[in-house]
Every structure is written in C-alpha cells, then in structure tokens.
Image 1 (cartoon, chains in turn orange, green):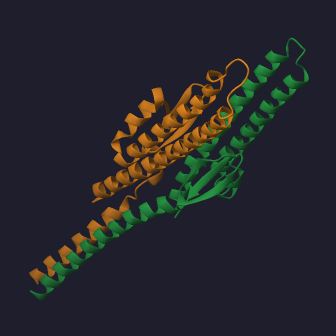
Image 2 (tube, helix red, strand yellow; image 1 turned 90 degrees about the vertical axis):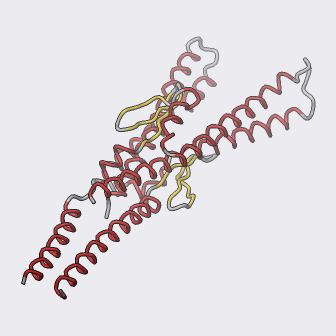
Length: 158
Length: 146
C-alpha cells in the first residue's frame, strides 16, 4: 500500500512539475522589445533604437560596434560592413578627386574620365554592399540576442 | 515493488517529455525567426528585402512590402506613413531643383530651392526611418503569431 502511495505521489509530483513549467508562457513580444535594436538615420549620422531609446552610433559607428560586442557573429559582420563602407567611400572620393588633380589647365588625359567613372561606380557599389551587410548584421544580432534571452527564460522556467 | 518502479518510470518519462518539449520549442523559435522575419537591403533603384534567406524586390519606396505590412494594423499605419514621407520628400526635392532651374535669375530662387531641398531630404530620411521601424514592428508581430 505504501509503495502505491509513494508511486502515486511521484506521478503527481511529475505532473505538477510539468504543469507548473507550462503555466507561465514566455512573453516573446517583451523579450523582442528588450533585446532587439533597429537603425535610424539623420543629417549627422546614424542612431539606433534600443528599448525605445535612441542612441548615437558614434564616430564611424564605433558606439554601435561596441554595443554589439556581446554577440561575436553580429560583431564580425558589422566590422566587415563598416570596413566595406569606408573602403567604398575612399574609392569613390578618390575617383572624383582624380579629375581636378590630373587637369592640366586645358583638359584631362583620355584615361582619366573612364577610370574616374569606373572608380566612382565601383566605390558606390562597395559602399552599398557594406550598407546591406550592416542591415544583415542588425538582423543577426536581434536573432542571437532574442534566442539567448528566450533560452534563458526557458531555463529559468525549468 | 512493481508499482514503485512503474511510478518511477512514469516520472522519468514525463520529465523526459518535458525536456524534449523545451528543446523542440527552442528549435522552433529559431526556425520561426529565420523563416518569418525580414530585413531590408538597398539596391540601385530603391529597396530589396530578405525573407527566408531569399533576396526579393521591395520597390522604390518599399511599397512592395505592403502584403506583409497590411496584416497588422499598427505596422500598416507606420508603413503607409513611411511611404507618404518618402513620396513627399522626393516631390519636394524634384520640385526644388525644377524651381531653381526655371527661376535662376531671381534673387530668392537659391534660398527657396535650398529650403525646399532641406525639407525634402528631411522628409526622405524620416520616411526611411519609418520604414525601418515598420519592418522592426512587423518582425515582432510575425514572431508573436502562432
């Protein structure tokens, strides 16, 4: 009889444990608002919004980059994105500067204009690819942060 | 003894079920994020978007995102505000350039044109920011949906 009671108690304990863990569903919306970010632009550079507050991205996005240090995957993507943007801008500006530098007072050499145009288009393309990688890194950051906080909530529930 | 063992086994089985259920929900959650959420990409003419790993066009102002955005009223209002700001910005910019080219000889033309451009650029920036926010909101809503 005692064994039956003990086994029943065990079953009841297990059932209660199961129901208790499922009684408080994880608020995904709240986790999303607390952990995700999104970008905003302005006349004087970028900002990002975290937990409803706007933060400056900093000089050459250094502020945003240090904010993303918590997630190595997003951090690597963001570093690549920033490097690409800088390289693209330098190439585009250099291509434009080439025109007045090589101007001899009458005209430019034949190779200058095609090279300048090619460099400018190439620079802009690299910059846009950097911007796109920037957007992707934010998406990856949000995913990883959300996943980590979701897993943490599950473990706390356990 | 048999009852005790069966109880213990049942207990272990239920605990196992519980752990497995959590693992599945973690995987499902990750899958849900990857499959349902989207992010913007820039293109030569307007925007693209990435959904479920695929690069798809989003239109000049992002207007081709409408089928996603209209599912949620809150997201839809942000989205349409974004389109309105972007269209107004473009019209103001074009209008300012056009006005200057037609009234170069007038003293006030550069200032009127410059003011128009400042407003136009501000509206365009505001519009693209609203679009970023709309996408962020959409991702939230789509994650919440069962």
